[in-house]
Length: 274
Image: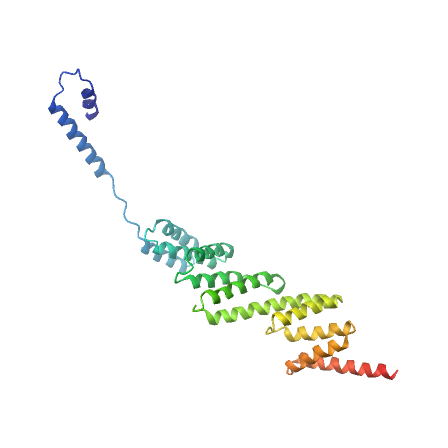
């Protein structure tokens, strides 16, 4: 009806146009607008805290995909950003707990790039390192993961020296170093068995120099000494095996070194008598 009256008003020649008609049009237009506004329902406010707690409960129940869906919603809808930031971190956790380490790495790195000084930044850095540590399986295929894990644990020590994971980190770093040393020994022993003694010596000596506290150091010294013997360098062989005996007198491998030195000395005397 309002539209029809408006059309009539546009036609100046219409005989019934009067001020009263104009007032009527204004009144009806106002009434129409009021009715339209009342029909629009306001969307209830997004309850970020409640949603975040629900997601945490789902994570506890190992329902990671469902939790991730809620956390993604929080990340996009929390206007305060408080829970949006935490949701980003928990999304990374859902991937980690699902053993989807590649995806977890992306999320933890993103969190650290955006919030390097956040109170949970050290936690994100620790979890990032764990993503690589958890993928270490065996010596022959775990070398690259151990190297990256070591780097991330050392980053944690440097960037967040007051982090609450110091005891764990020390053990993790030691494990990584031992595995890296084991890899060097693995390769060195391969060369030794092939008779490539110079290549073997390079690996064994690298192990001793780069990982002096590793468990494989005594064996590396022993096979370095044997390699020198095979290459006809008795002086270097004696020095290396004597060093092993002096540093690790209680180990069985030191007894083997003594036997080798004794056998070499006996052979030398025998040769001189010929």
